[in-house]
Image (cartoon, rainbow, N blue to C red):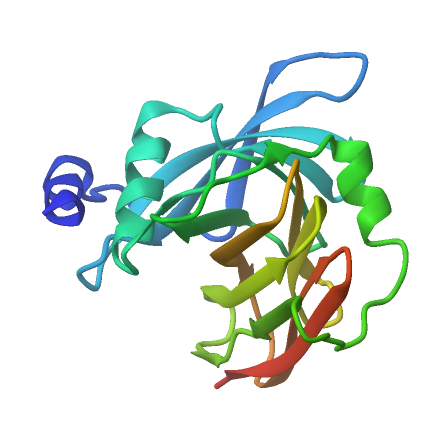
Amino acid sequence: MLATTFLLSAALTAPPMAGYIDRIVEHRADGDVILRTSEHSDFNGGKIRLEQKLRRLSGNKFSIDFSDQPAATKTYHEALCLESGMRPSTGRGILGGENAIAAWSCVSSETREGTPATIEEIERAFDEPASSQDNWTDYARTAAPSGSAAPGQPFFAIGSMNVKSSVAGAVSYSVSVDDRRCYAQSAERHAGAFELSAQTGVNCSGTRPGSLNTELRACVPRACGLSQGSYRIR
């Protein structure tokens, strides 16, 4: 119902746009704040235009705070997550890569979110490569995005994860396309043992026909999970 209501109130009437448009709304010493306008699925085969609020970190890397977004974007995020029976994440993340457009993150309705990590903590969490490893009590299970899209057209690469930790600490997770040409990553801290089910995705575009590799990784203090998939551009 929410998705339908949003569709009726925000249907796209302007001509289709290519990629995205950035508009600086605040100059800050730690990075300009921008509003990025891009097109997204309206859940009914069409497109709608949305703005995501980002802060530039360096080059093609931006921070995003899912709790600090325009009202229409929050409504869309809620509708997107509701499609999978989830709710929007309220944490922070990093969007990066030369062709990354937007990022979204959903968590299970039964999940208790932790304390959002700082941007510096999120960056440090991915300094070391992850490998798949579980133990008897802790695990990190992931499913990388897979699908197909037309050349030059944005697509939403979304993956899923389920993690469990018997000890307090951080969970970090990332989704990437084409060797991080598009990626989104996030982390949060938990004060005690925890479980988390989530979906995380990045809007990207493929310029030429072919296969793009995808990856989703997640780590808790005593376990990591890594899975790979592909997107066919045709």
